[in-house]
Length: 164
Image (cartoon, rainbow, N blue to C red; front, top):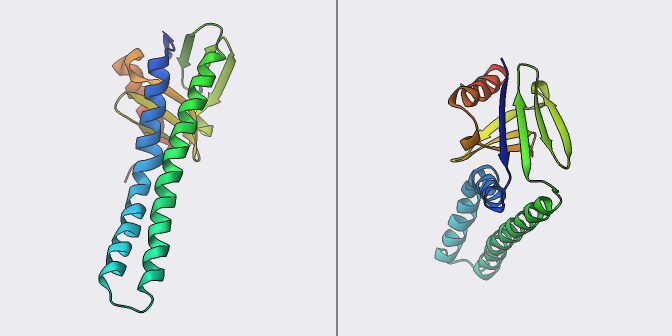
């Protein structure tokens, strides 16, 4: 079985893909840790301890550091996406999916990823993110794929990584 999709990469698609990847894949899993730090900060404020200023200062600094880092990373990722779009001579992209690999062809070159190298597939509202470890290999817009092709992608993911 083989599926293909051809589309033009626009600035809108590029930015939406990065935003959804950032919020869904990078940030959402870490919000729990951020809430723990915030809860610890509130507990330290409520305690009457001689070390209260130190605890409050430490947790406030940690909380602010995390927020500033996440905002900085977000803007760096957006800038990188915009720069990547400028590298393309022609915005047309062709994606081919079959039983053995995914092929991405654009004016900047051809990338082939065998299914065995794709550790998981993350799904956002509008995109499918093919992951290897913590790195995204490809971010594909769902709108340009048939329902059958999207089902094929999900089945390939489940075949390799069954859900429990």
